Image (tube, rainbow, N blue to C red; front, side, top):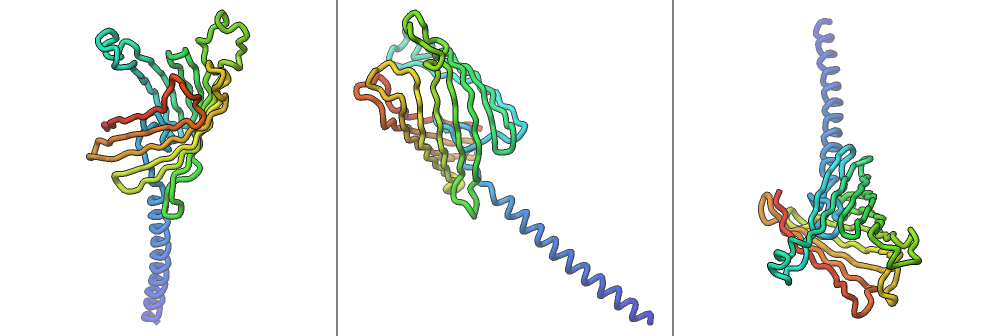
Length: 240
């Protein structure tokens, strides 16, 4: 009788142990799958000029102070562009998981802007790319009614909407493509379309544990012939 009781206890313990192991294995597989799900392509929120597919985590607040300098062509007269610096101050906040909002002000055009960025999907074994939507509205407060008598508030507005598609090819290389729609309510060339379509491409190449070379380029399909503006090409170095 005593032996039977001991045997029953051993069998019961064995069944419990097997069940617990199955649960543990399922948990490990689930955790492993979740851990391998996200494969972010970029560490920074911008590649250069182009937005990346990185989105602020919920509750994270970032302050960016950016400077865009003038041309090198004027030499020491403008200290190789440093005298003509444009400054931008921007706050970025992760409102929800996969959703960030931002507000900024820059000296060029005394422009105020707000934006929203949302991650639809992350790259994984089940989905080949990171898929993010980005949209911004800008208000140019420097436009002067003395020079533009018919100026309305809506003429100060411009908009941009992008679909950002990136892929982490391997541990060193990430690539992105960004079809973009731009609307400018005020254009200074009468032949320039208010609605413009732009295709951006960019990438990040990791060259050491803490350094990467970034580059992006944007082609405007609707730029008027003879425009003073050109398609932007950006090359940069990130140091973490």
